[in-house]
Length: 143
Image: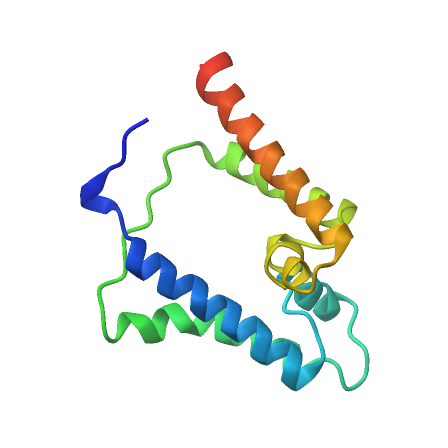
């Protein structure tokens, strides 16, 4: 394995991780809620009275943040190197896993592990091992 040093971004990656952790901590401290994206979106699909405004604001912030960033820096070019049907299938599998695991990477991996939740540790280990195994199989066995 080699590192692509021209595209290696340890400082910006570290800064992004710190901002993500800080925002999750502030969110739980101010709102008493976990910043799990699947839970936030799921709450919009089955709305309850008084529970929609903050969810809409959360999703709007996720959608508008890249646009605000684009005012100050050049956004990277998004490239898809696979078929759309494969991406849709992968998305559906991720959605199924999110429902099966009662949360997503942000809910379990960022918020749950920081709270030392045992089920979040198991869920995070499960999706990480599944991801490693999938990449290995796709790149080395089925290639």
